[in-house]
Picture 1 (spheres, rainbow, N blue to C red):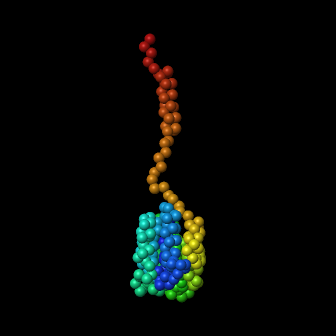
Picture 2: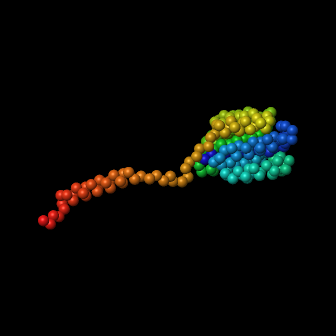
Length: 223
């Protein structure tokens, strides 16, 4: 089982258009839905962030929860305290959420379009250390042109990668790359019944043969 959490930037800049009638937020949500549908057997969670973060959906296999989340998470409909971009704070929150999962591999997919306001040269190192200690691999998808160097540092320190995606088709390609890098692993959840009869048959035949031989030497002869 893989536990994968999407850490989605919902700041105001995510309303910018990447193509006609398609915003950065729309492109990101469409690709996330396609990624969840393509990978069966994994648990997916969704955390949104701006200046603060909110765990919208805990890791679950109920994918309809993610598909129905988009109308409620559009940047224009969220409170003002989602206006900034604080990536370190959001990653720390996602680390706590993923570290609580009892089993399976852990991956975090950060989707953002801008630089972070809480990276100061040391904060990103602390976040990377926490994520690495919790065995959480971070993949970062940059939709916009600008990004903080701390994002690349965290991805590299946890064994992940940073991808650039400038349009919806590129974003879908990025998720395909992540899909190849982080394959699902399945474990049997029920006992597999196997018939073992040969040893018992051989033992029974041996006992029967000894019994017949004993009858020839120990049987009662009345005449």
